[in-house]
Amino acid sequence: MIEKNAYAKAGVDVEAGYEVVERIKKHVARTERLGVMGALGGFGGIFDLSQLDVKEPVLVSGTDGVGTKLMLAIQYDKHDTVGQDCVAMCVNDIIAAGAEPLYFLDYIATGKNNPAKLEQVVAGVAEGCVQAGAGLIGGETAEMPGMYGEGDYDLAGFAVGIAEKSQIIDGSKVAQGDILLGLASSGIHSNGYSLVRRVFADYSGHEILPELEGKPLKDVLLEPTRIYVKTVLPLVKEGLVNGIAHITGGGFIENVPRMFGHDLAAEIEEDRIPVLPIFKALEKYGNINHEEMFEIFNMGIGLMLAVKPENVDRIKELVDEPVYELGRIVEKTDASVVIR
Image 1 (tube, rainbow, N blue to C red):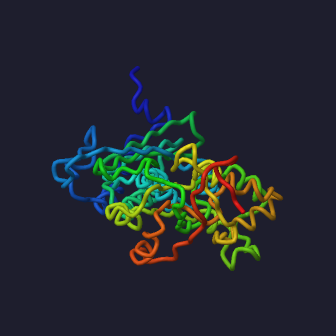
Image 2: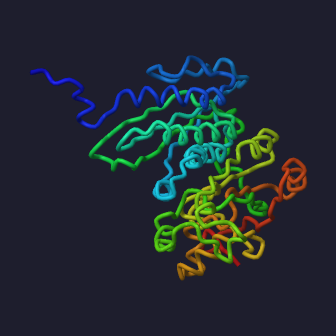
Image 3: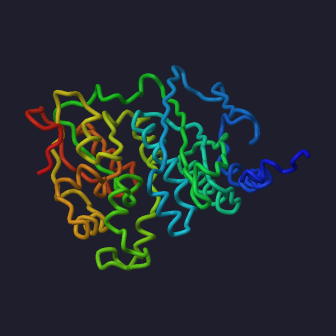
């Protein structure tokens, strides 16, 4: 006898997959921008570069996921912010190279397809794309029973951006005497969550810790990663920035040296860093070594710029938020990053 509905009996609900596509169309529509071609549902996302006014185009790509922060989203049953995290981790890397994000594609794998939940995830992706000015031109949802638990899912994506060849930021222009400017982070962003979950393993997430200024712990831990594209791109186009460091996993110690040569170092004044309350709480409740905090977390600075001293005032005019003067670029003697 021929078995009917064999795929469904194996745990894969094709109809639920169709429902997800229908649910997310309205979110994808929010992200349309110049160059986007075709409709959702094709085999490949299409983008028309000829629509852009770029004389010597260089493509810059970035890919990332959200990591174990997803486990907290699942634990707290809050899924509408992690999509922005995924976009941010990709497009912030792209703007660090001086490129404008053009489009994004996501990949969601789950144990059981829950259309309402996955719509929340994609809504967050779309919000991230809107903030980055990137089109959401495609993606993939895979239902994989046996690989993932029924309530589990993973999220990853990649973005492609474009820059004029002459405006690429590769660290070659960073020089001794450059000023280090910092832009604030929104929170932990999407790094160090294996440690974060360990520190707060016995907490429900509803606690309001005295350090967190009245906010429930779960809201602080799921605060989405900030996207810096629209703030920084005008600075790049005006030629005001020599180097950019996206402060992600590895904190200050790993990421800051990636924006300058091996003969230079960053000298940073710790008292100029706007340390967020969550980092003070993590250090306290996790009994974490103070110096190690700077090797793991962004500590309140999500993006760092190396600029000529004469450009500082102009940057502060263009940026409608506090810009923190953190330190300067010096000749390297021992460490690549010195925090005083």
